[in-house]
Image: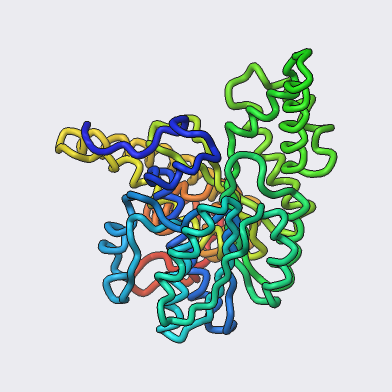
Length: 428
């Protein structure tokens, strides 16, 4: 297999200024998802709100020295073939957002206000220059805060939002950068004014920080560092979380990936119970389809999970999962192999989701449930976005269940057996 490899997680330290020299493949997936989500989010709310905010808490320079994955994506998109755009492979999340602001302004769709925070003075200066270049004579509504950590800028940001719907994107390096208390403030804001929160959860970094709890050293400097690491983890997972995570680390530290998986679910549950969000989900950001231990998960908090998770994100993530199987597709032999791998993966997923749909219908039995609600409930129940594309539910799950006599249907479509409004239930 040939082709340029842009990733390798351990090449650079988490806070390296060299991070923006070359965009990694996991960043490409993240940026494509944000590109699609900003579009869906603003098109959904733009008819009811004149202004929508975007907050990027760890903006960096705004673009990379080199990159991949954006230009081919928009070139192959039916939507973007019909709209003028300026998206580039080297765009980071701030420039993606600002170019959207420019597009939305030209369409007179919505005023998309952007707020950028970058702590490093040099990166902050480059960010301002890159934003000014996009904004030449356009009068875009954005603000680059003076160099400072996100947690210090946070009170001013919240005061600047003006009670408008807001999409928050917190792409922090490592565990440090924001606290659980700030997440709760964001949750309470979007509960009142609409919006969603995306944040990067560093699975392996969380495990490394927990490991400092059992570090034995008589060196005062090492002891102080260990205390700092464990305090940072506690601040991220929530007040008094050390009461929970410290014994769990002792229990799971010898089991590969066990603690980081526990910590992610613990974090999401606290967001649901204390953060003001109706529901919270996450999805892994992988380098390759064989990546069994992704370094990052994206956590999403929303008060409209049926739309945000099931209608917007689910198919976006499914497409990114599919692309993982073809990113090194350079020969016919490889293509045939990856086709088989992807088809085998889908067969396993379809079998699992048939059982999930049956479970959903069993829970509401004997009532009828619309196909749309059955699919939505199944996606939320499995808590793994992108497992199947929504159309696959009709083709690969509902139709075979109907043909096997396990479900019955009323209000079928004129041309297709199932529509969103068709109603189904388990056969008595």
